[in-house]
Length: 108
Length: 118
Image 1 (tube, one colour):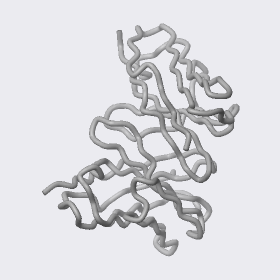
Image 2 (spheres, chains in turn orange, cyan):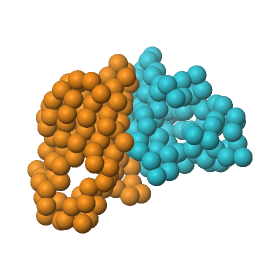
Image 3 (cartoon, rainbow over the protein chains, first blue to last red):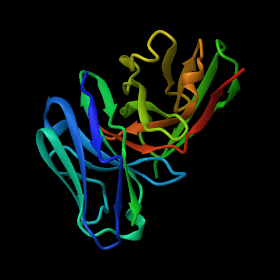
Image 4 (tube, one colour):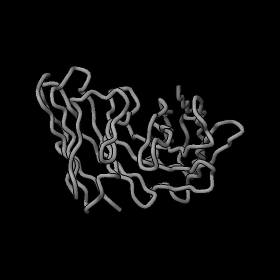
């Protein structure tokens, strides 16, 4: 079973700055099976980015995903106030869906 | 628009059972798999179970296998999660969510809280 480890646990960033979130898999995985979700306080998660180029409808261009093998990154180029939230990576494999433990992006 | 509404949560004693429901609307229910994902208080997301579009395939996390059963009733556009032998560590908000692609999950309902406590 693939284990996803996200870092850092908490990222303190000022609005307008860049945020780089990491997701490391316990073994090499295909980027086709890696996705990112956002969860704001008191809300359900929502899908942001998935597969090699999939994006949620209306997702701002400041969000981008990259990576291969065991190392994947979610980048938010210029943080807006509404981007402060917890972000999860997720993998699918062998009919199992696995989440990382999350990275909280907080206002610096 | 797609809507998923969970119900059935509450406080239950360890070892007892509870059944959650997820009422779906706004999409062709019989064309999509449905997931249950849970989130313990202050913790991250844990995938629990998935049922395929026609109910022929069901998958479970190891942590609930043998205790939880997922099912669906297409006549009612509803998915169920039967939870038996509940433990304190099953305490969480339980979300139901629609299959977005085979590999991804979206959108999600607002969740229902299950508290296992004596």
